[in-house]
Length: 562
Image 1 (cartoon, helix red, strand yellow):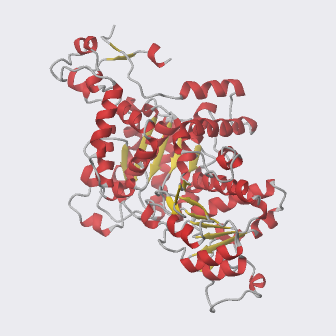
Image 2: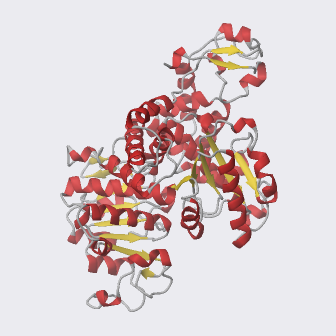
Image 3: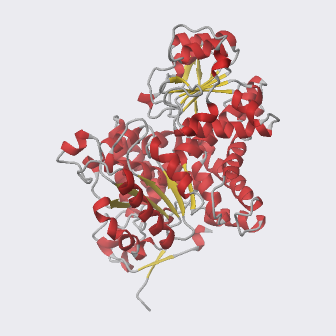
């Protein structure tokens, strides 16, 4: 039990109060104030974490602007991590949009304005010869999880350079708050290879390396130096890639996924949560995933990842691989993907349609086949937006889809909210309340016939914290496609719609720590099944419980060196 454990530290006075992992603020009891020379540095009142949480909650409520709320929470994280996580866990629905999407988007854009304390590691290109030295410090001895970004494609906001560090910091905060992984085991890393954001390069406030982005062989060599250093420093670490540009995301994942335990949340986490939510729509409509016709608008790394996982699930339900591919229609930068069509990349080729299939289609014009034409001809049951194009799901398109499908599943997944392909209120208005809606960012409930309808947030936070917990607890050597699929199926099987067709597609956010445990078990069991883990089932499940950290203040003893 947490209250049966004690922490030994040599830090005293200001040094102890300035350590975010050890600071208790006014909750230091009198005996510890004696022992650690804290009298006079703290007000005389001895409080509890519950009182501190209430005080911080009241202060947070006074901030009305999302960026100010984000900045407040970042300051709290840098002052008292235990209180920071306690506040999140007891107020998940309210705080999740603050510490992560959508507020984290502006947090990254304005990261240079609010940076004031070290958190994580900045590995800049000019320091490439120092990577081993930087990572060798004893402060990093306990690291088990790394989230890394190069800041080039932050959400739907583009190149944020060093400001992209807000994403690894935010992701790892959710590893702890939602997955229970100890914050001391988590390390955010920003690979600063420059930026092509002219506004940042011209800003005297910018804290990153003021240089155009390094690309080509120099970039690849830098990434390889980083991965080699990580593998040497932590042979069993979990490395999560985050918000790399589409041209690099899948390429880097494929290059390194068999060299160390790694995954890309934009590709695999998005795939898992989107697939789980689409599977849950079948509990409402009675239409299994193998019988659905699914249109993707936007077909970069995220869209491709979702589509491949759906193909695998469809095959599990009895389709051949070719039949499964035929259920998916992908729209990229140049319209519907067509074999030998313009701009079709090798990784998209499996989803390109044969020109002969389209001869009977009725098209509004010659040239590129856009979303409206695809919807009219395909009559899809589901539509997924991962384009970053706000407003792309127009009233015309949505009404056309609803004319053919009784309960259309429409998922505008682009983040942040400003990049969403449509708002939930619009989708429900245009379908007379019949749409099954999932969004990438949080939206307020929509109003349908005078009633409030909560909106499912199809957010990766349902997957990646539990996946990480399962990987660490099983000591998995790799993150396999089977483990990602197992996580998706586990989440789908927690859908409230299984018991009530009028209920939400996904479990409530308030239950997400429990959800993470279930996802962790599914991923770890699959790792054991595939021979990727040295654990047996009993040992693995015991490890899950021992690896879950709770944000409570523990008693301290002074380490006097004896």
